[in-house]
Length: 226
Length: 80
Image (cartoon, rainbow over all chains, first blue to last red; front, side, top):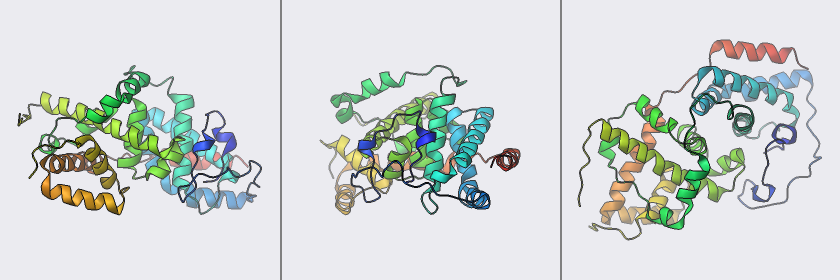
């Protein structure tokens, strides 16, 4: 992935966890790697050919993060304007979608999360602590059957997803809705692949709990074997 | 058929890797065996697959409003 120093500078990154495409750790490319010099015409070309095709995915991501249409509008617009301003740090032919998602995610954290209209939810740290203990991780499976959730409609799934703390919601959106690989997610989120895996695992357990509660409230009966 | 699984949590992690397309050949082979012999694994597999499909297929995909596309295109023209 191209280096995007200015756009990302307000978010701490973990350089030691950066991975090369073959999955191994490596030294970071030197910070003063020559920025591509695009002519104005080339800039518009790259923008239209490489960035604009992802705008629906970007909007969907923004909407799922903010759960608000106006916020999603602002977030997508800010992200695309940033992408254009820093276009010289994008290398043609590399993963434009992941590059754009990373900018959007960082903009969301820096600019929107604090003033988000969503009511205060469970604090992420609390949830992390709860689920971080080794016991919780090894013993935790959610008692739920596939048949209990198979009749849920999209809006019900969205409600359950929205009830998750945003970091957990994010990994589920990236993986299950946008289809990013773990390696791409690691780059978008600036976390090691192992953290992607465990966060996704916890996120899914939380989601299944929400779905179970929802299914129970709708009167889908849980059969029990015990 | 095994009615109980003593490493259910590990099996669940493996099942998720497989459904995400991130598993190794070895893990795939192990799952195949488990799906023939372990009831908890079969149930977990169906649940994980169902939940993933709820997210991929049932949730509405929001498209970017045309107005926003137009605004962005107009704004970048004023840059450079």
